[in-house]
Amino acid sequence: MFRGKDHMTRTFSTAGRLLASASMVALLAACAVTPEPFTKDELATQSVDDRTAMFKGGEPLTGPLTVSDAIARALRYNLDKRSKMMEEALALGQTDVDRWDLLPKLTANAGYNERSEPNATRSRDLYTQTTSTSNPSYSADRVSKTVDLTMSWNVLDFGLTYFTAKSNADRALVATERRRKAVHNLISEVRFAFWRAAAYQTLNDEVNKAVAEARVALGKAKQVEQENLKAPVESLRYQKSLLETLRQLTAIQQELSTARIELAALINVPPGTEIKLAVPETMAPPQWDTSLDRMEEQAFLNNPDLHEQGYLSRITLDDTKKAIIKMLPGVTFSAGRNYDYNSFLMDNHWYEAGAKLSWNLMNVISGPSALKYAESNEEVAKARRIALRMAVLAQVHVSERQFRNASSQFEQSDELWKVDKRLAELSDAKAANDASGMLERVAGHASAIASQLRRFQTYAQVEQAYAKMQATMGDDLLPDSIKAENLGDLSKLVAKRLDQWGKGQMAVTEVAAPASAPVAAQEVAPTEDKSDLLSNVFRFIREGLKQPAEPEKQSEADAPRPNDNRPPMAGDVASAR
Image 1 (cartoon, rainbow, N blue to C red):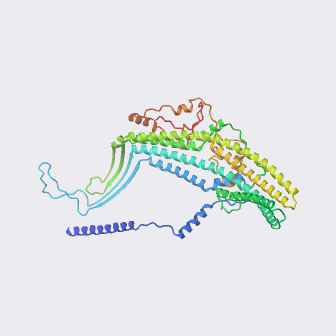
Image 2: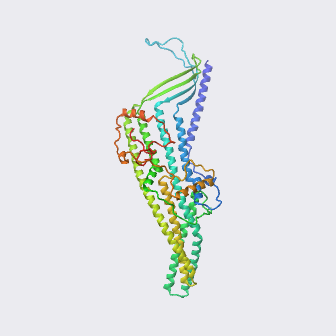
Image 3: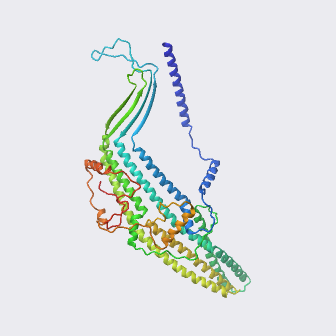
């Protein structure tokens, strides 16, 4: 027996030394952690891999690029748009994770315990405090092994998890609206960059030719000055005119030099790629005769910023309900199957069930403050939503006015270009070999080129202003339900929708006729007193848990209602709980 005890003592002594050694090694390893910057080879490898990933999967340019082709490429390959789509997918993935959190916890446990000595005990008389003289006894094996499978469900945690899942579902919808906004901005940028690149393609050869002629004329003028063939003042004035013209042409070159690079970045092709554009022969501003009242209604119904703020308001409402739940007691139900290898037990396996009530009384004390903070946050979100609605209302008017102004400027630039073009043709027809004729010719060509550049620039502003107007109203170029198999099909769909936009057609929902109280009256309506904790609890039970979150559907406040005589307030949430 003593030999067995010595053996167990040596065994535990060895195990203790091993555990101490392992702990020391782990401690030294933790102390040895130091910052490790990337090496040059690692940075070079990362750079090559990222550059390959940037342009991976993109179809090569095979022909002239139309506006619809450029937009289709941007929608499919633009890196910023891809990142927004991944953020949306990540948020949607979180909603799937939250569904599992609503289920009860199922826990499997297995335990092993070994003692060097049996758990032997003696007994003592309760009244006489006399220790029993019988031999010590034990009722558990020296080696203990247990296994159990337990399911538990906490009602309080379920309520908190439920509203957290609702909030995360709304955050997924927020990511969707941010992706919509990114697409709107991307389309606007592509349309603007396309026409700047079109100006470069159209004017680059003419600018180079005019610059060459101006330099030749300037060289001849300097030669005339050196030979004193003309008065110095006249010769210098002539050179000054040529230099001013040359400066103007150089500024045009610099203005156009980055156009293709910007377009290449938007459609995700290498910046040095030669991009051939299919420039239309005629340029005409899109038609637009929709009234401002209708535009306001559509903006209130479809604007992604308003949708986003509405979902954020719902999230703050869920936070208020969570603050109420935390003040309630928690009930935990559990049931499980247990097995114990103890040889002294009559039954080694059994079922077990129970219920436990717990209440953090500190939450009851701090609850009113937390509830007050949550309600204040809710009011702030409401104020932000109203302020944003006013900003969107102003943006509707601003974008419409910008479009009208840009269209007017384009018409004036178009007329001016036609006049300058005719003057340049006349100067070519009557130009002679003398210096004055050369100056008139160079100046005429420079003026015509500058007028044509302004014509392209103002048309690019027209396209950009029109796209911003559509973005303000939340008019999506293509609905999410449309899935194009390849880039060509997507380009055809974009071209068809651009043609509809050019004719002033909107893919929007009809708004019902008005019948309820004005918006201002609803916003300042007195809210229900929430100071009574008991009424809050009953209101939470009655309203907070009666319907699960449905992130795929439009909320009741967002949906247009028949007999409602005001524009639908996208993302509105009820203030009374």
